[in-house]
Image (cartoon, rainbow, N blue to C red):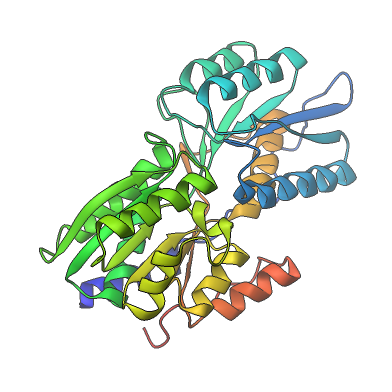
Length: 343
């Protein structure tokens, strides 16, 4: 168990937020129209997880405009639902509109290659955030290490469930690179424990109602399930009472559940005993940091590493109140207390 404890402690201490100060070379690039328009493109507009990133994007645009010398616009674009073909169309429309830069969360790593490369060929810098397209020519990817996030989720489940039991996984769009990396990290970590059996992985295509359906169907098929890993929080948005079999097992049957993301609804579920650990991303930074990075790249020619680590948050019952306060105050700059005091 010492190795497990060391992993999470190291993870919490080393994954710091991205620096978000727009400071680079001395001489800015001249813009003929005095305006910098950056297209910020999530996987979908119907997924509430992207709304905080949108707000960060708008806040950064306001801040950069006030700094001068240019007016900066965050152009919030996307398809209604997660669909790679629609996302490619949105990106093409952004290029046709003459945006100055693009930040995109890819629905498919392979599917994003052509749209990204076409934008770059048109002279528009592109970076990815949240979900990457590593084979494209984007100049950097901003996000958590989804693989390490999956390992952290597995560690949390083992701490609460133990080293034996039947486990199910819920994912979103099959093939989405960020989700696949989380699953792989989870599986690699749990593979060290022969007593843990992953009985099924079900997909909901980022749809809340479908997520509810497949979770409840899984509970019917495996009434003796010991644990869940929600690779995203889709069915939780349906609210209390939508998954009675899941809730009964979590509250009264000893089943444990770990989820990605740390949105307020999940914090309430954790406090109520429906979830037992969360692995969170820097949602505000998806928009805020992306805007600053694209601004620096366009205006100052600032280079970035291939991967820019945004950091992650580990939330348990021991620090959930601190995360709830961050949401209430909209101040995510303070570090969380440790998820396991004394380690």
